[in-house]
Structure formats: C-alpha cells, structure tokens
Image (cartoon, rainbow, N blue to C red; front, side):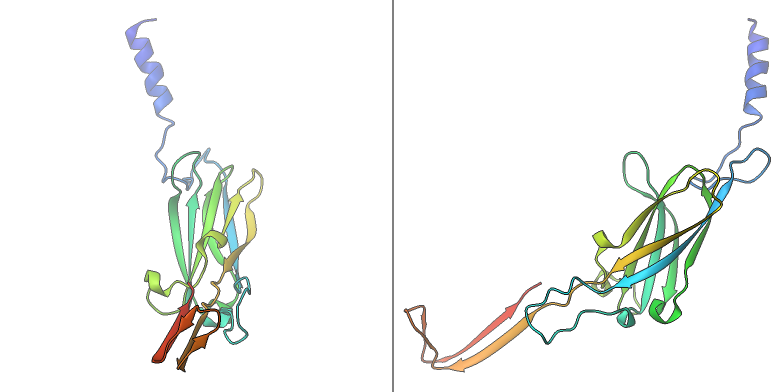
Length: 187
C-alpha cells in the first residue's frame, strides 16, 4: 500500500474523533446516550451503641448542610471526582440532588458528608465516611436513574467524671487520703 493511501485512510479515520470531558459524554451526532441520576439523601442516626442513657445519638435535624460528591469508579486507582453539590438543611428540605450527562455503561460512586456547622472543616464532619456512599452502575437503555444515598451519622462520645475525697478501694488497688478526680472519655 502506498504511503499516500495510508495517510488518506488515517485522516479519514481521525475526522470522526472528538474530545470529551472525562466521564461526561459530549453531544452531537453519533454520541453515546446520556443518563440523569437523582440521589435522595437518607440521613441515619449512629449505631445506637451507648454506655449510658444520657447521651442522645446525632439526628438529621443537627445536620447544617450535606456535601454530595459524584465520582467515576475506575478499574484501578482512586475515584475521579466529577461534580459536587451542597444541600443546606437537608432534613428540612428533603428532596433529591441531580447529576446530568452520565455516560451509559459506566459506574459512579456518590458520597455524602454531613456537617454540623457552616464551615467545611474536618472538625465539623458528623457523618461516618465508610458508611455514607453508594455505587451506581448506569445500564444501557435507562435515561433516568434514582438511588438512595445513605448518610450515617456518628455516634456520640461517652464521657464521665467523678470526684471523691479519701477514696479506699478494697483489695489494695487504690488507697488515697487526698482528693482524687478520675475522668474517662472514649473516642
């Protein structure tokens, strides 16, 4: 085959190529169909394991805002974040958050992070990361998807303290004549 003929075949083949944003299909003739995903956050209290009756578990009413992130799930390596949405007062608002132009045949992961205050600092996070995500596969032939995004709130910490004077514990474990303060805090 001559060099000129090979070059013409390559140029004809390349004219149909187009660049697309990663994870989101580009429109136009011959473009793959796109899907729309509606996620409904479901705020759940912690596991409920408590060592005392006084602390109450965190509730949906204590969530100031929720950050929902959608990412592609690659075969290897970390997820590639595509979009982020912020929902203020999700318990009062209800409803769902939508992501458009999802590629058919791809797998996505949605993560929800609940915050107690207005800032997005790590100290304000009140959800459990490992229990606050959902993986969604976009099947061929489905244009509108719906999924529930579970967001598990952390358990409250246990804390107790006691102050005594002249403490005596039998069997020789602790004997004191001065004031003692014991404090126990578990993470």
